[in-house]
Length: 178
Ligand SMILES: [Mg+2]
Ligand SMILES: [Zn+2]
Image (cartoon, rainbow, N blue to C red):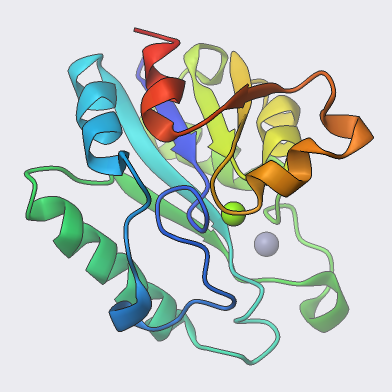
């Protein structure tokens, strides 16, 4: 069985941009390359799990989402690294009904685990929102971490965040499991 780091995209892998859909605005967050390299060295797959309700809302298309992922792939490839898989929820309950993949539902992690032979109990989720943290918990990961980048610092102030494991960046997240 494989193990994985499940990473939220916006505010974790790339800098938070409201309804990001332009490759030109796609920039890696701090220490992401170093952290992903370390994850791979430690034998983890690196899987992005991202809510993109902008698709349901008609703000952008799946093709534009793929273009952003192409840019992430290109930025990482320039450093000899990669994301092993991207999983996307394009839905929003107000626009196209309730789905089982919009975080905090665990659908994206369950699908990734099924398709890549991942042992969820040996895997880690990192996100900048409490809904990411809950997604990891709902899926049954070993640890579900809140990161300070993106919305993370603000999320940390919420009472519900009291028990949540907090890290400053992705490098610190992987170092906890080295
Ligand atoms: Mg995010
Ligand atoms: Zn969905």
